Image (cartoon, rainbow, N blue to C red; front, side, top):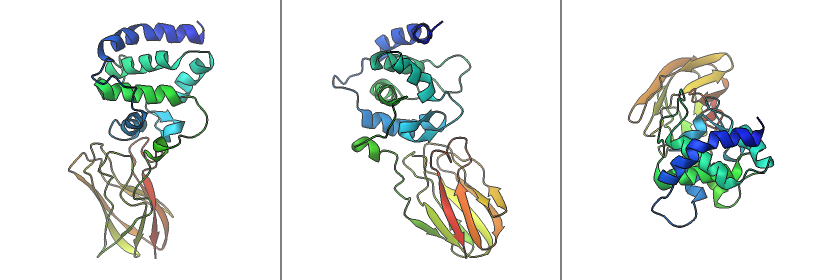
Length: 239
């Protein structure tokens, strides 16, 4: 069966679903900025799926550039691809780890429209889309105080910490990552022979661990699959 045939077979059930759930209350075109925001942040799609234009590198779900890039080159239209994606959001395949209805209504339409517009398309997003997912704390530095280094997760749901850099003195350091994000995270460290990580915590929890560090440069990161690859990491300097 050719690519077009495979997509057509896959699309039959989802497109019927879209006819039922895709007609949101909004009559305007899909909001691609909202779609990308949900994809990389609160929708957490990017923690499982790789999509180059969204700068996500998740490995638990299909690579969306691979999944739809060939179909696009074979002449499958964006509307059809959007319908397939929206149907799969509402009703994931049997055995999928993705919960049904992760995003709903107009939000599901926006996510599907964004993915359909960029999957398998070379280049980078521009304008307002380019600003979505940027780490607001990338230039901020967390400073260790009395042996404790606090690096909160980004509360918006973006796969990021509130700080992109950190400094500490040599010796025992306790890492704390308060999490007010709707996404589960942990904090871990690696580099220069050091390792360690705290537990994965959901909203309201704090991931913490202690380790002894010597002078050098390290990386702190979230070890949840796909999160580090999506940019949830930073540089720790110990001196």
